[in-house]
Length: 72
Image (cartoon, rainbow, N blue to C red; front, side, top):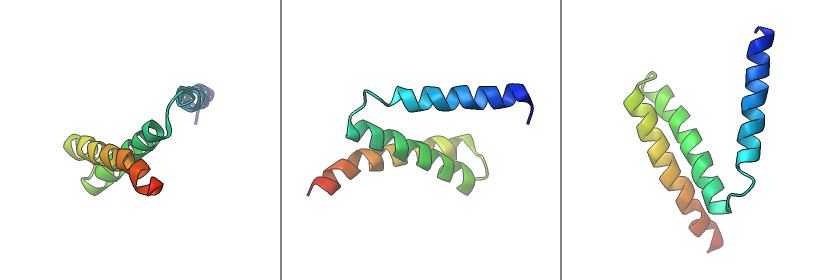
């Protein structure tokens, strides 16, 4: 990887980590679920845009609901 690529990756990681500082637990769970669902959807559909977006949507809904499940 070139030096510019490494810098871009580091900057994106820092922005992602600090962007979640003011979020509630429910919002963090929804964001994590959407990220995991998007990756899973992309993998399962061979990189299809529809699969990626669908997986992110489903993962976000599941992540949002996890908060209710863990509080019971």
